[in-house]
Amino acid sequence: MTIAGLRPRIQARLVRAQRSRLVGLVVALTGALALIALPPATGRQPAVASELTTIAQAWPDAERTDLPVGLADGSAYTPMLFFDLRESLGTAPSPDGTRLRLVLRSVDGAVRELRRLPVDRAPQYSGLTRSGDDIAWAESTEDRQGRARTEMWTVNLRSGQPARRLTTDTGEVIFFNSAYDMVLDRGRLRWASVAPGEETATEIRSVALRGGPVEVRTEPGAWAMSALPWLVSAGSGESGPVQLRNLDARTVVDVGASESELITCSPAWCRVLAMSGSGPSRIELMRPDGTDRRQVADGTASASVIDVGALDRFEVLSLADAERAAAGTQRLLLHDLRERRTVVVAEGVGMVLCRDGVLWWSTGETETTGWQAVDLRSLR
Image 1 (cartoon, rainbow, N blue to C red):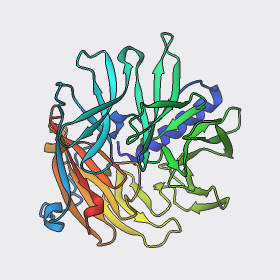
Image 2: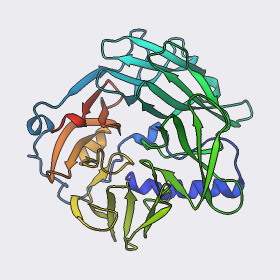
Image 3: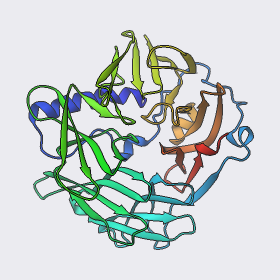
């Protein structure tokens, strides 16, 4: 299944949550769903030629780094947010396996533990976001009856103070494994939750980093957070039109699509997955107003991440022929919308994430053996 194809499931889950008025965290996509989707092998020609330029050839001065999967204590590290190529934030189990830790890792191997949660309570750290020296995240755990509890936490990396809880008044949080699931802006943390009631509506919640009550703004319809001040249709990836809503201007942009197209949008670009009788036929990108439309791949490729057009310039794609699919890996591609070219980033890739201008991926066929990252902001 392609990443774009996951959004109808997200919308269905969101609607079910509203109808049943669930209590707790609604996680539409978990870290496991960041694994690159492996399309079925076909007899069609691959989306790009095997002689494609590599990222090292296209940008010799690109800033890159390699991280071993293991920490000094032997535990396996999974990066969830890169600040730059020197520091990242991620998770690692405690050496005895009883806790899941949130840690800050430096490229020199230094590790600072920020939080730890017992593994028998199904812990998750989600929505990690940063503004300057402040970072914030959501923590979810389950009690012995399986009921979920969500809290928002924050820490200032340079103050030397421990992490502190911002609020437990989170609502029914909606996460899509997007870089915009939670946003820090002007001293406030913002996120989206399912509004209570029978009518489909979304709460945009926020709390000041200094603490205080949670402010709630309710918007009719099913929405997901995007780059402020925008929301996007939570049903993006469904056939038919989608919308973008500007919270400041209180305006809505309608993005047209035919019944054979699946659309996913950011404020700057929309990804169009054109469908045919046999499945996806091509991937196109266009502006939300329908202009500047161009094909970036055929149906053998898939989108590697939910968010469209990193830095309003790069589309992250993946490609797997039968041999790669059998090994559980893919070729990672990057389409440069400005230069209108596609380059090969890496081979033998497993998990892929892209946030705050950094693209990173896991290596290893049967299990993760390491992590590699490239700073897209250095591709000039």
